[in-house]
Length: 324
Length: 165
Image 1 (cartoon, each protein chain N blue to C red):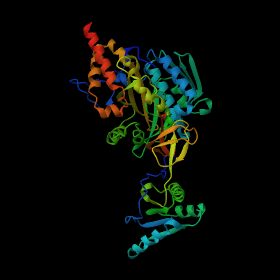
Image 2: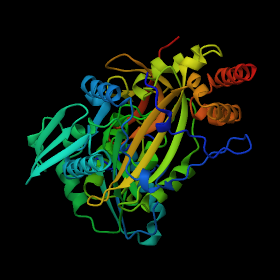
Image 3: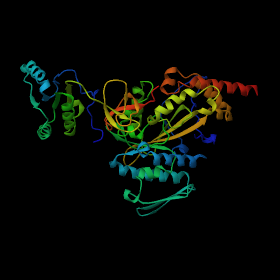
Image 4: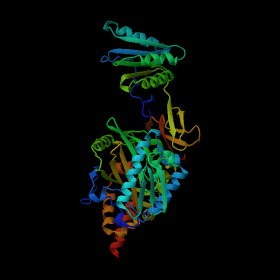
């Protein structure tokens, strides 16, 4: 299980916390200049890339899906990722272009990708799959058609309750329907976000932070529900600090200038509850937020079986710190 | 096209009984023998209204070539009515959407049972299921809860895997 070790790079989710009462916002906000580029190399980079690649190798059908007609968009994605990575981290990534002959170098991993831009026969993987394996994010490419967005390419290793295999070809509204364990009445909200996505323009991505709690597992997809569903019951107030993780999903919505598609990028980060002691103000804020979660939301987020234990753990932790 | 509509048991086009859409210029009615009596009755009821309609009866088996010729020769403003058993309806529906009909332009009345399919999230196999909320995959035997969501690409409901007690 990964955890963020540099807390300056961890996106603490409860920033709209006021008066010790939980407030939830789904708004997609504009990004400050330094956040427009989603690239982020953390101390966990190598271990995350290793795990992501293992999953793609072991379960290609589960982790990567595309339609054959998406190649042009895939190359646009390759160019975008290379540009963003070099822009933010010129010391880690570089590219040499000799006409259509491109050589991309990942200096952290000491790897080189050489290919003819626009010619997928020059690669052993699909272009999107190849370049996506150099970055720890999940990437979903949604094509804009008839005022909706349809998932046409997806590379996913960390997203919760999402499956490239199941969600391929679905509209934005269809993808946001399936939440297991409880029937979800989120139609209005989903439609509001869909309409907002229509207004996103190239060069001005939007962002949103989603959060959840995970019980001893970061990989919670439909394919393994039979395993992690019951595991949520093993959390106690004693072991919650190690087992339960605050799971933060920082999302970027980027309009692709040529294809007009929306690229949906996820940066999923995990922090075990016990590590909240490293930032006492986070510990207190998290405690008050979790203690105030309405039941329906705990159900819908799938945390109902272990939320009370987690709150109790945090309360005990705060009390023990006060005693010291 | 991958996002073409697919006929499934909860399709919006499925209605309890035939009812003509009076905003359309022409009514194309494709039916099989099970529905023949009802179709004739509906047409008789509207006989005073100079309904512009074209009936097409499916005899024992669908002749695909004839069906395609019929569907492709239709003009804008035609409303399609399918009244038949499930298998005939599924064939006509697929051919009609291929020929350019949208779901808004199709009404379907099913005679007899509707078929239901599930997509196993363990082995990615689509199989037919009977009624009930919990089923077993026909290929890998995984136990699945029948989810409420349908994929047009996978042509089935999502099957959430679970381990029985």
